[in-house]
Every structure is written in C-alpha cells, then in structure tokens.
Image 1 (cartoon, rainbow, N blue to C red):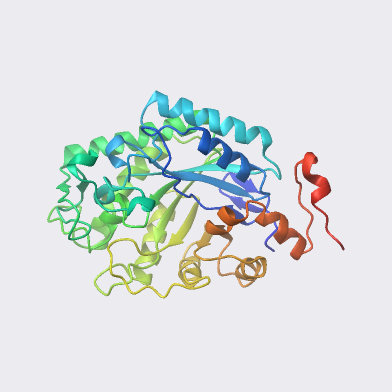
Image 2 (cartoon, rainbow, N blue to C red; image 1 turned 90 degrees about the horizontal axis):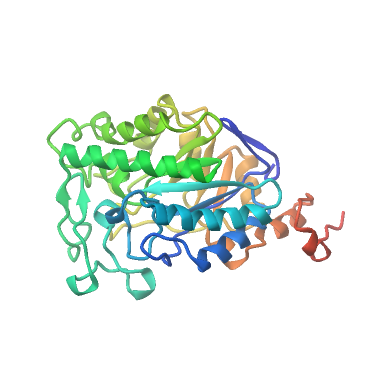
Length: 358
C-alpha cells in the first residue's frame, strides 16, 4: 500500500511517501543558495512521491530567523528557480514538488536552533513581530503587535503574491503552514487569539482570517495545482485546540476548496506535555480522516517502512510525511522498497547499487 499511487485533487503521486518540509535555516535574506541546491537534488532522487520545499515566508518579517527561506522578492524567486530546476532535472519516480508557504507571526525574529533558538536581541538585528493578539510566545520573547485589519489585508496580499511566484516557478502543489504556533495557527488557537472583534471568540470567528487567505489564494491557483494546509491536531492543552476542533477545522477547509491536509500538533507555546514517541501524531490524522473526504497526511516520528506501510494499510492516513528519517538517509525510499518488495525507479547511474531480491 505504501507504494500505491494517490490522487490529490488534480494531482497524482506515484506513492504515499512525502518528504516533509524541513527548515534548513541557511538562506541569505530569504534566498536559497548552494546548500539548498544540494539538499533538494538529494531529495529529488529519493524515490518519494512528493517533496515539500521548506517553510517559506510570504514577507520578510514573517521569517522565523534571519536565515529562513522567503518568497517575497524577485531575488528570492530567482534563487528558488535555480534550485527547483536543478532538482527537477534529476528527479526520479515521477516525484512531485510542493512548497509550504507561511508566516511565523509571534514566533518570528528568533535565532537558528543550533545557536539556541531564542528571541533575537537588538544587537542581533531583531525585528517587530506581529500576531492576532499582543501576547508573547514565551516570557523571554518580545511583545508582538496586535495586527489591525489593514495589516491583515496586507498579509493576505503577501500570501497571494508568494502564491503567484510559486505558480510561476512550477510547483505541483502549494500548502500553507497552519500549525506549529505560526501565524495561521495563532489565529485559530484560543491560546494565542484573544481578539474582541470578528476575528476572535468562537472557532468560526477564529477561522475567519485563515479563510480570507485561502479565498484570495484560491483565485490565483490554476486548476492543475493542488492546494493543501498543515494544521494542528491538538494544542496539547485543555484551553487550546482539541481533536474535535481539528476535525471541525478540517471540514471547514475542505468546504472552502482545499485538496489535502497534513495533521501535526503542538508548537503554540512552550512547556507542553507531549507524549513524543514513534507515530505519536498518527491518531490525530486518523481522527481527521474520519470527517473529511480529501486525502490526509500523517507526520511525526514515522521512521520504518513497516510502520509507514501499516499506517496506510490500516486507513489511518492516505500518505505519510517523514523528515528526520530523510536527513539521516536520503535513500530511505530505496531501502523501504527493498524491505517491502516493490521496485521503484532510481537514477540509471545508481542502478547497480539498487537491487531487489524477489
């Protein structure tokens, strides 16, 4: 089942393995460089069904760090074109390329993980962050400004502009980051959204801004490109989003034209008691899948071929996304195909290193 094809709206992928979007924290003012070139070309030969380019900011202040990728300028677009075209030139197994667009909201202006990941200081060229409500991410984080309606409209325009750039670049799918405590998730979650206007309060109100983004973006996405979103399955707090909330969010997004969903969790705040372990988020994808008809993707410590295949066989999700497994082994799908006795296409230059004993 892991190697069976799947239709995602207008798109078809050759198997159910997706390379999850993984921040590399290595860009130059939003521009991809040689590091991204080698990373994308490795993943292009992986044998996966889809490769999602890392979280990409729709505006400069929407980056998590100074080194995050963006798609807010011609320079960003040209740098990404170089990387995507190179990856396309070596891609195998009919790999489809997607991009994840987002805005970091109050989690912007931080340092890269290997330098501690803390909020930037003035000396480190910190910038003013924005959020649904003026509530800092942590006690040590700066106070974000509460977005007014004009600023929200500008962010919508920036999402549309970045989407147009992604369409020009030739991605087969575009997904939006609505999880991990970033701006879209911040609006949906009652933990970070304490607004008193029509964008706050009950869940339908908190969904208003994300839906405004989706509505405007949908207008510029051609019919042949799939549109998806990563959402949270739970905030892991009683006063946050629950599994039932995730089911409702998923239904609303399907009703408004999304072609697929990826279900993750957490990230809205620190100090959460998350039972991290193999496949710890799969049950969230399974719960969402019960309530929608569009494909659902599971993610979170999915590492072995048997584990990944079982998720599909049991019907818990339609596809699986792996991140760290691919950082460790860019040929993970090759090994999985051998374990599961299913031949895939690999580069001719490497065929002598790939054999399946049937």
